[in-house]
Length: 193
Image 1 (tube, helix red, strand yellow):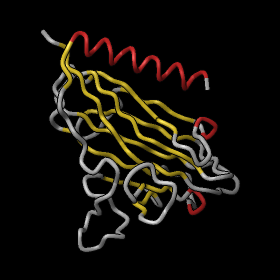
Image 2 (cartoon, rainbow, N blue to C red):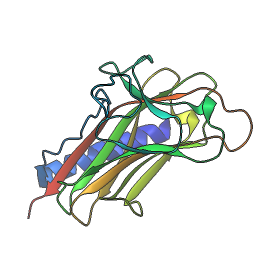
Image 3 (cartoon, helix red, strand yellow):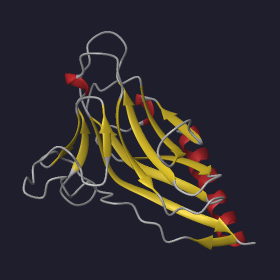
C-alpha cells in the first residue's frame, strides 16, 4: 500500500510540475474503455477496436462484472493459460510531441485466487521497442474485485508513443482466476520553451 501511495504522489507531483512549466496536450486514446469491437457487425467480438494484442486469453468481454464504466472490459483468463507466455494489449499514439511528459494509466482488479506473476504497464517508442518506462505490479498490489490504478510515467524523446499493458502468468502450478482491465487513460504535458 505504501508503494502504491508513493507512486500516486510522485505522479501527481510530476503532473503538477509539468502543468506549471508547460501545456497539456489534447491527445486521446482510441476506445479507452474497450466498448467498441474491432468488427462493428459482431458486438460480442473479443478484439477491441483501436488496440493491438498478443498472446492468449486477453479478450474484450461484454458480460463480465464489475466494469468501471460502460459495459465492456478486457479480461485476462489466467485460469485458461497453458504456457508461460505473456498476453497484452497496446496502442500507438502518434500525435504525442517529442519531449512530452506522459502518464499512462489503466484500472485493474482481480478475482479470488488470481495470482499471475505480474502485470506490467509500459510506455514505448511509437511502433514498439525498448521501453521508455515500465512498471510491474504484483498480484498483491491489485485489489480483489475493486479497481486499482496501474500507472507509468515517461518523457518521450521522439514524436509518438506506444502504450502497453501486459499480464505474465504464474510460472508453475495451477493457474486460477482472472484479471479485469478498464478505462485506459493518457495524460500528456509538453514543457513550454
